[in-house]
Amino acid sequence: MNAPHVILTSKPGQFSTVAGRGLQPIEAWEYWFGGRLRARFVIARLDAETRIEITDEAPPRPVNRIPTRLLPRFATLQAARDEIACLAVPVAGADTRLVRAAV
Image 1 (cartoon, rainbow, N blue to C red):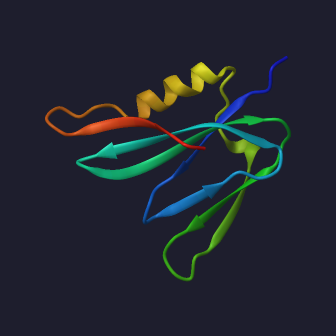
Image 2 (image 1 turned 180 degrees about the vertical axis):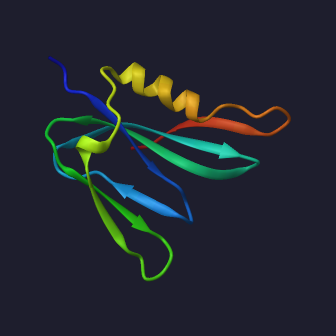
Image 3 (image 1 turned 120 degrees about the horizontal axis):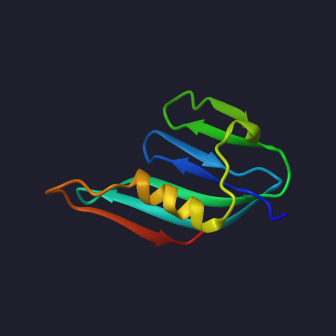
């Protein structure tokens, strides 16, 4: 059976998410709205249960360690891509883009 995929989200100026051991980043996407980067999504293959670190960017920069068992899972890479496409829905009259980025 293939390993499931998860989506890790970071929002510039708010929080960043880092993959732990057991997660293999596959590809990344950036969501731009109104000319500003609003979110970065990383699709990662879940090879083993682990924790992800979510760091708040506001002082004192608290770190939360969340178990991967709480994350939605996707059976295929394409299913994870489809989910990101749903999260980054174009807004009528607004400049919105979903752009592939370096991992």
